[in-house]
Structures are given as structure tokens and as C-alpha cells.
Image (cartoon, rainbow, N blue to C red; front, side, top):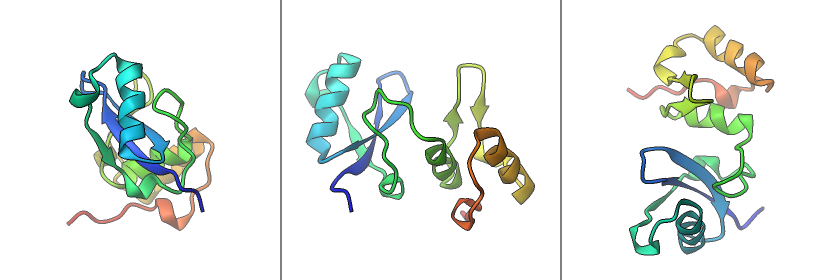
Length: 117
């Protein structure tokens, strides 16, 4: 098992990035350099449900499986400036299957929506 942990960071403009790092300090240092922020101003948060994925650094593209995990936990995802995925729009299992087909990933049980009630 990898010693890397998943973190998210806000780039200061409300856009979140995910990356895999050994520690919060390493994630903060990378984000500070990448986004031109002061180290003390950077806030990173752990995202444990993304630990199984190799996310690379904050500047890297996340694997499509990550998008599904992110949505499954109730967070939106911007595919591009023109396309935003809202988990509330994925109301049925067929919606999730269609998204998996679009992203070119399988649809195992772990991607089925979880209830947030």
C-alpha cells in the first residue's frame, strides 16, 4: 500500500484541485508554489476516499475514476469551463452508467451513489 494520501486545495479562486502527497506540509508547499500563494495562507484538506487513486500532484489530471468517487460523495466536478457535473443531476443508476460510459470507465458497485440522508 502506498504511503501517499489524497489532499484537496482551493487555488484561492474557489477552484479545487486534488493530489497525492506524503503529508499535509508537502501538499501545502506544492500548492503554494503552483498557485503563487504564501505557504501560511494555503489550506489543504484530507480526502481519504481518494487515497486508493494515484492522483499525481495538484497540477496533474485526475484519473476519471476519481471524478466518479468525487461525485459519489456529493461534490461537483468541472470537466471543462463549459461542462460542470452536478451529483444532483445523477438521479438514477442509468445516469451514473451513462457517465461511466462517457468517461470510459467501468461501473462497479463502488461507484453506485450513496445515500446522503
